[in-house]
Structures are given as C-alpha cells and as structure tokens.
Amino acid sequence: MTGRPLEPERFAARLPRDPGTFARLPRDFRPASVEDRLGDGRACL
Image 1 (cartoon, rainbow, N blue to C red):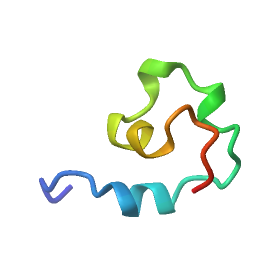
Image 2 (cartoon, one colour; image 1 turned 90 degrees about the vertical axis):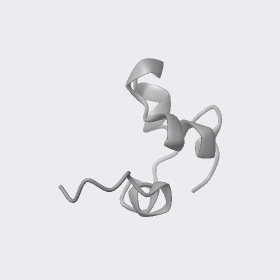
Image 3 (spheres, rainbow, N blue to C red; image 1 turned 45 degrees about the vertical axis):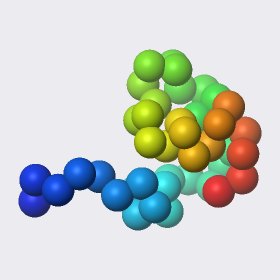
C-alpha cells in the first residue's frame, strides 16, 4: 500500500470483462468510483 487513493482506471482494467460481475454483487459492496463508471453494472468496460 502506497497510501495513494485507488486509481479507477487501473482498478477497472483489472476487473473481469463479464458485464454480469457487478450485477451479482451487493450494491454496497461495489466501490463507488467503479459504480460511477459502470452505472447499473451492465455498461461495457
């Protein structure tokens, strides 16, 4: 841990490309920055 905030672009790049991944997670489990980028979880990365 470097103490730097998580970089959304780098984090999203490491996520599975399956659009259903976030749809299966509880809403409160999703990182806010990622949820902002993916919307309802069905947006394509």
